[in-house]
Length: 287
Length: 235
Image 1 (spheres, rainbow over the protein chains, first blue to last red):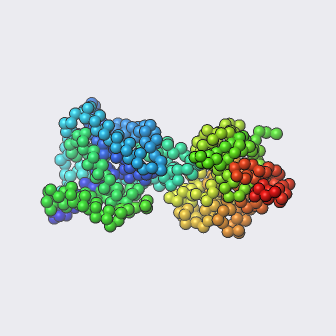
Image 2: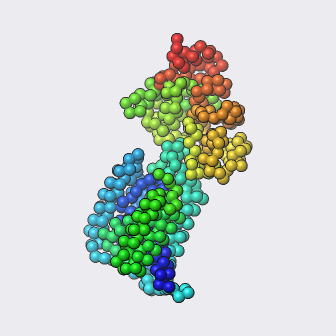
Image 3: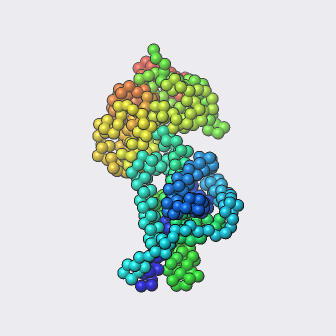
């Protein structure tokens, strides 16, 4: 039963990792951009949540009403004002610029909020649990997992059922021909980044409720997100959820064997899958 | 007589240091079908890319519908009513046939073309609507590419090498459909290596040779000798 519990907890943890990864997957899928600052943007969202909850007294989950559109606007501005200028045939400029952005974000957060660990207070939700057939599930991890499914379903719906999603896929397929169809790729990229950072806002708030955070924790979130994207397959959103779950389960099973193995087990699972299936388990984009 | 729908004056285009077009002057009247012929590397596709905004022009002006579009991006030109059927069809592989057609309508221009009228023109597309565009034959893909451009309800449509890589019977079918398309009041430029097809459907013809206009004339009046001279540069 202990092992089953470890797998269950890992699955639920995978929901959070999938949320970390969904934004990465989305922008890679649309514009082939690897955002090194993604983890720091998750932390930025957590800090925005902290500012809103402290300033207004709102519950962190209600703070999403303000933080999600704020991060969406930041995403659109960031893409139109900075990242669009880096996108081209060469993959290096966006990597370097987002690396620089990561450093700037960390230092700005350090100046603004200090290095002291912070946490979002969600009250009873943090400790509430439910028992099911001898297994106990925390309400927060369960809610996080359900939110992850909802977010990924929503993204899939946008991608495959709306005009905006068609535009995302058309621009991703062939930017030049998409422009002939009247699609302004700079605007479309801006909307994709806005959507990615709106998802990041959800990930940041749930991270802030689940654990303490400080300006330096973005790097680890980037790695977890990146691993989930690679395991699931580049550009495949449901694959990203699967990747998050595999990573989460590997970590909790590793911790069950030896608490010191938690992170190592996740990284090993990632390496094994990378060695066996370099394009991930369910790739949408090959090569 | 009304102003031409498209007027090109002194157009030059470059690929880095290589000059591909030298002072091109041309025009397309409203409702007219214009053919542009020329050998490989004559600059036909470059001219189409320059007019449509896909390439930055080195010098010269392009006026479309009375407005200067010389420095406009391709998406801005498309919104003004210029559509293109690109060489090699270039459908969006991750979009179905229906989605490829719908993306053409994204410019939001009103007009006679919609899913129903496009499927009337090419009935096979209705049967294949949900299929991946890449699963279609070359001829069917060309129909999607033409349908996608029509869905924009353009005032001017550019056909770049629509017969390239297709079987003769398919080319015949596609050219048979052209009068129905152009009969809807739009103007067209047909870029072709197949001189016979181009002359048969057009009112006027321009021949390009090494980036310059080497011949301009009425399609039914230019002689075979004139075309040979302009096409190959043989006196």
